[in-house]
Structures are given as C-alpha cells and as structure tokens.
Image 1 (spheres, helix red, strand yellow):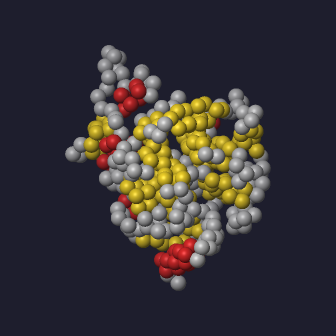
Image 2 (cartoon, one colour):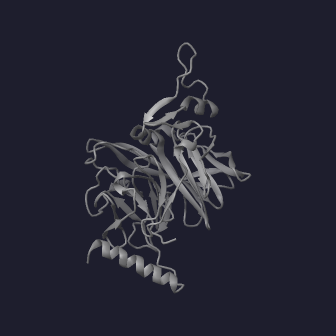
Image 3 (tube, helix red, strand yellow):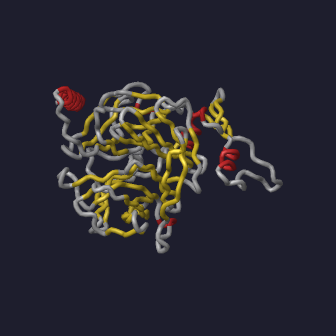
Length: 372
C-alpha cells in the first residue's frame, strides 16, 4: 500500500472512532525526518516502524523550519519569517502574529530592522551594544534569511480547551515572549537570563535558564506573567558542562530536569549522555536519578514528554529519545543530525533506526499525532 494511503487510512479510521464516541488509541511519537517532495513531510512511527509521507498545505513544508511541537501541532516559520501552527494529520493551520509586532522589530522592504540594544537594555543588560565612547550601536538591518537564522530558537504550544498560548524562545538573549489565541502581537517577558526550555506542569508555566535556574511564571492579569525563581542547580553541577537543559513531567506528575552532555563522536560534536534530576517540590531539593524505570523521555525541539514503556511496548524504558535541542539552521543539508537513544543504565547512545539517514533539512522533531 502507498505510504500516503496508509496515512489517509489512519486518519479516516481515527475520525470514524471520534464520530462513534470512541477515543482513538494513543500513538507513541513520530519522528519528522527529511525526505519527500517540496510539499510533503515524512514521519517515522516508532509503533510500527513505518515511514509515512504526508502532503501538507502551503507554504511548502520543505521551505519551513519546525521550531516546536506540542499536542499534535507543529510550530513553523517559513521563508517570509511568518509563523504558523500546523497539524500535519488534519492539515489545519493557524497563523500567529507577525514578527513586526515585537516592539523592537520593524519590517522593511528588504527584511527587518532589529533594535536589539533597546530590547536588551529593557531586559536589564545595559552594557550591551555600547562602544568605547559610550555610543549605542544602531539597529541591525537583516534580510529575511538572516532574520530566520537570527531570531528563532524554540517554540512551545500550551493548549487549554479551545484556547492556546504559544511561548517563543528567541533572540536577542534567548528571551521569552508569548501570544495567545486571537492576539494581534507578541508580548515580551523579562527573565534574569536566557531561557532554554519551557513546560506547562500542574497548571503552572515553568522555564529553565541557561545556568539551570527553574522559574515559575504566574499570570499577571490576562495580558502577562510574573516570574518567580524556584530552584537552582545543586552546587556540584556546573551549568556550562551541559549543552542543553530541558524540563519534563514524569508520568506521575513529578517535575524533572534533563541535562544533556556533549562530546565528540566520529569527528562531530554530538550528544554523549544525559543526567536526570527529580525535583522534590516540598523540600525544594534535586535528586539525581540513575534509573527512571519503565519510562522513556522524549526531548529536543518538541515539548519534552515522558511515556510509559509498559503502555507503549515499542519504547525502551530507562532511556532518553533525543533530537537536537536548539534550532540550528545549517547550509550543509547532507550532514547528519544529532538523533538517537541514550540508555541511562548502560550510559551509552544507541542509534535510532528511522527508515533512512538523517539529513540536515528539515531539522528532525518529535510529534505525537493528534486529530484535535
């Protein structure tokens, strides 16, 4: 059977189940990998080992970069620097506010003017962009392609019924902004330092910073959030030893911090390991876990998640399934990406068999298929 027909059959069967008030069987994550045509995305299913090709609406998927995935939706930006939510199963698409609604960004005929100095001064970094004579550097003029490479790092979608909020980690300074359903623009938030990841846990928004500070963000009316520092890394952990830090909720609702270690493998900088810390929210203490049991962690550009390997037997327990954690747009489209499985017990990386080589375009990302 044709790969496209397989996907259509799965989609139709799921919709029929919903019509009959039968909830479709949950799916383990798919890995979006390079391949297909200009308007087709390829997804590798861990549950059946099949590669599915799915035609998607304009703008062409091969011209987009996926910078986040949550609840069955991708967050993408295209060659015009326009940002969309896209459900590859239903093909539904939602436009998000334009970049020109950031107060430090101005659209021009050829691209954008970015007043990063004013923005970082507003964030508290008042020594940035000043020359030896005390003069401020003027705004940067960036083309569309330069803006794509400069601006975007990661996006996280948080869904609450029919409402949603998209949080965007972006330059300058790995900063955090958000837009809710129906918003005409992006709202910038102020953190003590750059943000690396974000999660919605037990009704609360949490972030982790570059130095490993975990922050909680409380709603400040309807239009914004206020931050509270919750925890820092234990003193014997050096934040600079870990390339990327992500937050994930365990299947029983505990907050965990996943620290990624990097090193040289086969001549390239690659993931070599992970450390997993569990937060005791009552004592406000971190405990390192050397065994997470029948649990698989998925981390990368997606919203990090934990799944039970007993519920999904195709998954390996006590392992971290990973793709790259920061958006890194490269020209070398034929270079391999950093994708694999880390076994916490054996402390080793296992290759992920996913129906073919991992090329650099588009960046691979985990997605849990959903018709919602």
